[in-house]
Length: 81
Image (cartoon, rainbow, N blue to C red; front, side, top):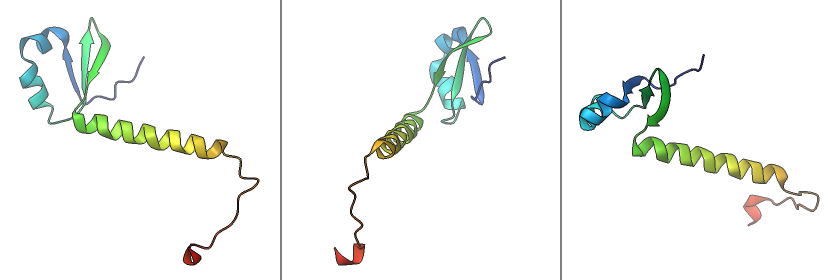
């Protein structure tokens, strides 16, 4: 059984009938779109997209840092800069 992280659920038929109401009623929370009992998509707010992209960017930066060759790194005192 797959876990659905969305606090709101609707089906594709209801979404087609009145998308504005469904989006408004979710108050910016994630909405799972169901079709025949399966999640086929998630609808998220622009703010959530920004948060996801920021987390993705941070994760990519940490991956680049982990791969850096620090064998020739020089220790610097920030007060001296």
